[in-house]
Length: 356
Image 1 (spheres, rainbow, N blue to C red):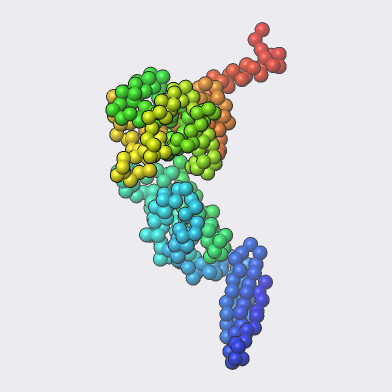
Image 2: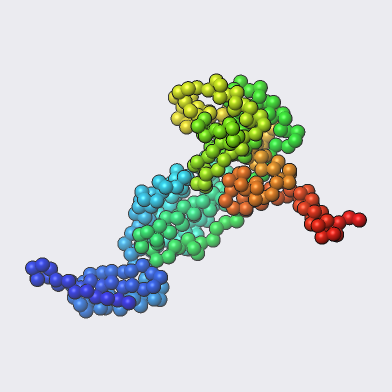
């Protein structure tokens, strides 16, 4: 409903009428007029437009660039993927920064989506994946959600009515039983003395590259055989298991580690990275082992795949890998079919319906 408040200046010479309209489910609208008749007329029209869904209100007074500035300053720093999201937001800033928020309709956004999907990637060229397009849409959606909930600049997130592209199923490439010993030998024989430890840790813990490579000695508990992670990708604390050769290698490394650097894999003195860059020796080991189409993240896939083939439940795999949703683990389900049959046999035996 609309309410009109009369305001008189301190000297009593100027009078103004401030209108405020509040409707459930919508951001409040305000305006100030010199004449009461103008205030009433605006209130009547604006309230009718808001009820009919024709009113964009404050979104006509702010641009996309203004929103992105506010979002990047207030909300972006708290995100772990801030740098990546910032790059996605730059797409919208460059192409639609001067647009009013009211002009960013679902149709406009959909056309931008299709344009982006047909544009080759800047690095290396090639077809842009649906996942990359969806991440760009998600970045704008987060900013628009901020405009709705925090700023009141939008009544509704326009991204709610924009369709996302179907993404390809997650890539699963793991080292086969023939490839694994060849690759481990190549890593062990590498001129880089840190490569073998890093690879063994990745394979036996299922840790992400950033989690393994950024480990510090204070996180290692030899007695409990764990490496405690306090700042993971999804924000949850979790422990990496230290077993077998990984534990033995750590115990040996602990006796010769540097005293002035707490990191397991310290970077070069003049390096810009926070941890050691093992790309060259890693690629070299793959070449020696004759392994193709394999990336560092596939070490994590290898750990999960071997757990699945050993009959580990999806829930337990998710616990080890640090996944919040079971959907991320579903890609390995086909590798545990033998375990499913075993469970079926157990169920049949329990019910007295097993083999005679």
